[in-house]
Length: 197
Image 1: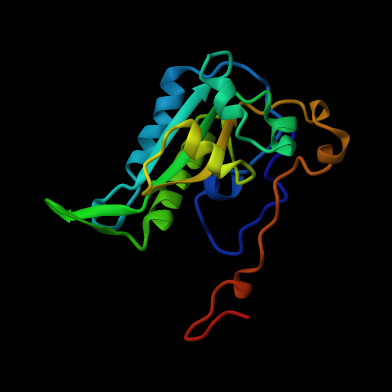
Image 2 (image 1 turned 180 degrees about the vertical axis):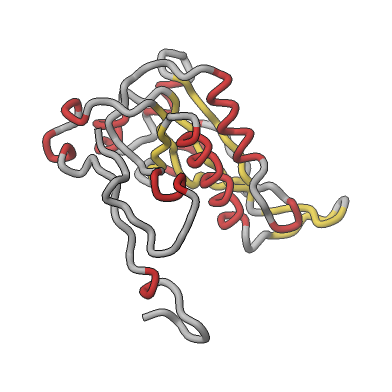
């Protein structure tokens, strides 16, 4: 199993930021409700503009009637490695909020805020010995139709959650990629007083 030994931060950070990664090989073991809802609880405490909390989650556990409709949203590539996930979570973001009672308006930060909730969920999964892999490859229109989403609620990602499994269970082309990925140098991402280039 891969680990985070090869990942070294340039500046001191809590270990969980470096250790967390997104494997594709899952074991298929059931996820206890206590674990799953701990992930949602961590997401619930993310910061958001006006405390609007725009994130919404639809989940399905493997082996339940709710699984197949959510699994069917994934593109074939993601279905190929995601079949052994323990749970799927459709991450949604509500693009309107009420800064005051009776006043609904567009939010320019809803996706940003929902991303913060996803990060909390992923870090909590890592802290509990589970893994969460967010996939952008899914049918957004089908998600909207399957779950009768309101016009101001937008599908963002499908998160596959599970215990890490044997990389040999993956298609051969993916086995070599089953390792924590590196990050760009900080100098490519951050600059004082100018756009980083």
